[in-house]
Length: 108
Length: 116
Image (tube, chains in turn cyan, purple):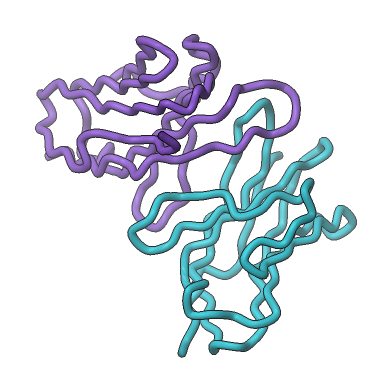
């Protein structure tokens, strides 16, 4: 079965603290995984993808096939990081399925 | 123009009405998508158009009827909707829908639909 899980609906951290948003997936093939972000009153946008192995806005995510995880991390959270984060899995062509999302709140 | 636009922003309709949602992009993208997003839930794929042809229909009820008149426009025609169809309807586009590596989807702001 193709599935994306994000165990935390809500996550609150203090400004300057490390943050980790968890994502686990279930997929029989070779997975392509992404993180999407939706800031308040803004449209959904791609944050990063595992293939590019890049760091965007200080966020990184490593695909761990053994643990079927793709956790999003940032060493020092900023207030502007407060948003809804969705982990997503490409299943075929450009079809993706989204995880349930984690709402991140960074406390000043 | 590097955005996906959607009109209207908000729509309220009765169960017997017929209405349409419109999506437009001028980025030269050849794949366009409709998603449905309920409150506090992730987007769920409804339809995919690739080169103006319907390529994916996620078993969506026939009261939702998509149309792609040209490569820049995508419509969603609504008829005889139910209150449970109330949601945010998102449109997205990408360079093309292919079996290769993922092409980033660019999302519009959505149309907030309320069915009374």
